Image (cartoon, rainbow, N blue to C red):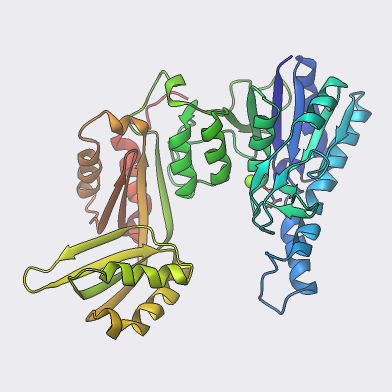
Length: 418
Ligand code: ASP
Ligand code: MG
C-alpha cells in the first residue's frame, strides 16, 4: 500500500460543510487504496482570533506574545478542533479514522515557542495507526518539545507540518488542498492571461514563495526540496473525481519534461530603497552599515554599491521591507558621523519584479529579454539583482502591473498550455 498525505488549509476547513467535502476527498483516496494521513489547519480566521486573545490576556497592548510558551498552548488549539471534527466526519461516513495531535505523533520541535522548528518525527505511532487501518488526522502547526511542552511552528506552519509528516510516513506525495487550483505563472489578478503550471521545480517554487507568492509556506518548500518530497497544490473546492487534472506538482527539475526558460513572474510592493550618498570607499564600511541593520533584526534584500567618478567615495543603496524603512533610516542617521556618509535618501514608491526559471542556467539572453521588454514600455530599472535562477529589478511602483504583464508576454507565458 502506498501512503499519501493530504493537507487542508483554513478555507477548506472553514465550516462543517467544507469539512464534509474534505472528508469526501479523503475517503476517495482511501477507497483508491492509499493509507492516508491528513494534516489540517484551523478554521479560516481562527488562529487570528486566538492570537488576539493571547494579546488581551498576556502582554501589554501592542506587544506580541509569540515566544511565550502559553501562547502556543492557546493558538495550537485551533487545529485540534478541525482535526477532531474531520476524524468524526470520516467515522460517520463509515471509515476508521482517528486524530493524532502533535504530541501524540509526536512531532518533536525546538523550544522556540511561536516559531519552533521540527527536529524529528518518530514514525512508530504513525506506522502502528496505519497498520491498524486508520486514516490519521494530524493537526498542523503544532508540535511538542523534548520536554513535553506544546509548540507552534509560526504562521502558515501547517504546510510544513504536512510535508514533515509526509517525509516521516514515507508518503509518495504530499497533496496540499487550498483555495486556488495550483501555482500560476503570475498573479491572475494582475495578468488575466496567467496560466496554471502543471509542474514547477522545487527551486523555482522556493524563489516564488520567498518572492511573495503565498501558495505555500517557504519553509515547507525548503523541507520538501531537501527530501525530494513531491508536493501537489490543488483546489479543495471540487468533489472527488471532478477535475482530476487540477493542480500543480512541485517536484525535482529532472521530472519536468516540458521546461520553460522562465516559469513565473513574481512581484512585491513591500519594498523601500535606502541610498547612502558619499560613503567613504574604505575597508569595513559595509560591514559597519549592515552590522547595525542586523542588530536591529532588519532584513536587507538588494544591495548595490557604486564608485564615484572621482574622489574616494562611493554610493550604496539597499532595499528593506516597507515597514522597516523608517527604522533603517533612523539607524543610519544615528550613525551618520561614525559611518561618514554625506546624505541619505529613502524611497518607498518602489516595487520589485522578478522572473524565475531553472532554464536560465542553460540559456543566454534571458536578462536581455527582460531589460528590453521593460525599456519598450518606458520603465526605468533602478536596481538589478540576480541569482542562478532569478533576475529581480527594482522599479517605480506605479509601473508594477505594466512590468508584470510585459514580462509575462516577453517569455511566452501567455502561450503555455496548462
Ligand atoms: N492556522 C495557522 C495559521 O493561520 C497555521 C496554518 O494555517 O498554516 O497561521
Ligand atoms: Mg496556509
